[in-house]
Image (cartoon, rainbow, N blue to C red; front, side, top):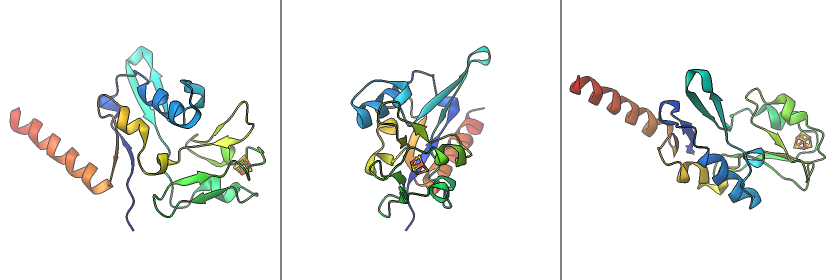
Length: 155
Ligand code: SF4
């Protein structure tokens, strides 16, 4: 089964952080960038903003590193998800993720990460500019090709 995933277009990101608020509200009922699974990295001197999201890797390093069996792949969505109840808080998954996409909850003392909101990611739903999309890779690439061609036709 081909799953959809989160795809970002930094050129469309204004750095408003709506995605972070949408994520922390959905998961933690709080508006807090520290509790967001999605993170916007800003390079203010250059005026650049990069939304960063979990790639839900096909061979997830976080899952391999977890000795508690707390991380698994959701078969329905393809999301790599953490079961808080099984997490011991050892942080091996934080170290193992090459993309820095696993966080640590300061109060619950467990690891947390993107779970694609069960198949309807709130970051993509709320992003006002379409910088984060939840889509199939083929659809995303086709949209990119269309946009590129449209620009060259206009030029
Ligand atoms: S912090 Fe939790 S989820 Fe991460 S490796 Fe340790 S037990 Fe597993």
